[in-house]
Length: 251
Image 1 (cartoon, rainbow, N blue to C red):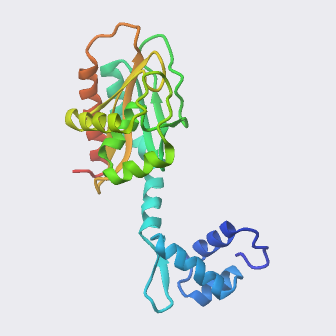
Image 2 (image 1 turned 180 degrees about the horizontal axis):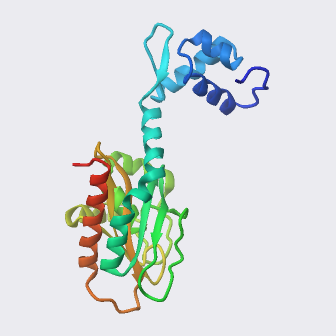
Image 3 (image 1 turned 120 degrees about the vertical axis):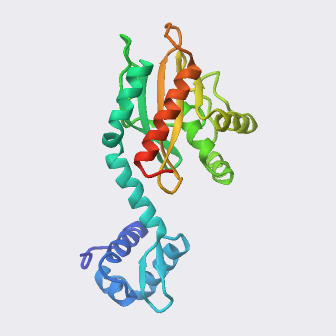
């Protein structure tokens, strides 16, 4: 598999060890499969054990850890979530007439995985594959509101809260108050905080473990009249998020 190939970086060696774990569990066999010295393999394995990517029985046997399984599950959900949720998204677009998005949580940001254009003769600049900051988008704030507080603090410490528009919340205390309001009403609002002229409402999607994995939103241009209130559309979005969560096994 990796024999005879120059081990150029730590990343190469780590990935080789992780790949070998899919075929064998003993340190000596992993070293042979990767053509790496046993001390090097042991050091890599211990680091992965510390990060929960690998488990060990203390007797020289190693297996994939919970974080590997969690990541694999997330990627599998991302692959089929847009297709599974399409009927719900389609109904949401028809009822609200706004542009509907499905976004998946990936690390410290969200990524649009599906977009259904609204009924009005304009198109928003959003696109599938676009990355989203969490602190200034409706779907991002909805996700943050469902995450543990320590995880939110750590995430904001890494990403900061850069302003996207003059309306962006850039103070952490103000954002905490906003997230509390999101939890109370069941959906989040983006009041031209990510893009001037665009208003959106969003809600979080959870899986069978209760973990936040995605979110759904509906958005429109603020200067065009629409029937119904933002609160009504927020409730529609929240209902759609609950239905999609049910598809993932959430209670």
